Length: 260
Image (cartoon, rainbow, N blue to C red; front, side):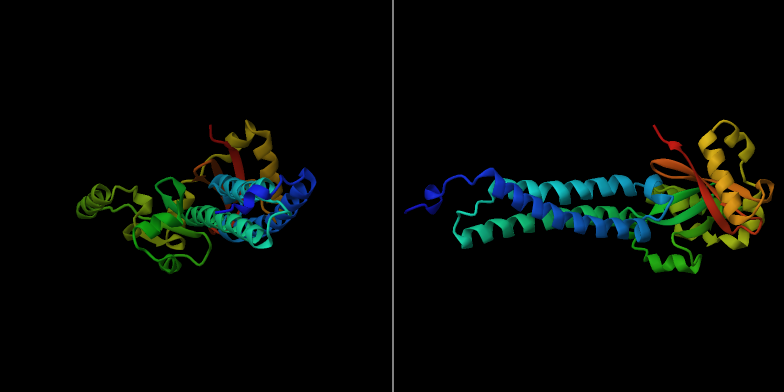
């Protein structure tokens, strides 16, 4: 059988670069839209840097901006029969979209769904934790209307409750702040949480950048340093200090250095 590809000479570099460049521009527009969605909806600050939004975006960008255009640069040849060229480019687009969908899904499932206060600090709980337990995220609205939800995890005070919690920890192999049974509305425990605040003076005295961040938050909220409560939020890549007023309303945040 005669192979049509044998009669096709290699394409000059210029048209291949033009095709790859056009593909890159189209991919860039998609990446821009995804960036907007990730920052505004899935990983609002400070979670974009603290919970992996930046790392997830890097993966998505590599797939979207590198994979497709590079493949186009390799296979594009205007001398190919139109049907063959369309087939080649369609396969590239399908491969790129499949890889992009996988990356976006990974970023989406890891988005912060709740900030849960347990003992002395908040912990970021990603959406995938609730998905794995077949817990609909709508359930979190029972405890908080915010996004991510601000929730208090109550440690049982009696022996029976403690034993039940320990059983759940053993069977589910999850930390207490990921157990829905312990969740309570944050506002019902304001007095207890307020006593867990850290000494912000000590923190900012050894970190000039965080001191500047604090002054910005105080100026924007027209509050004094001594008026507010400062609580640690432990996240995957970067810890955060959440700033609350005396009524436990979230005012802002300070970014700590990245974890090593």
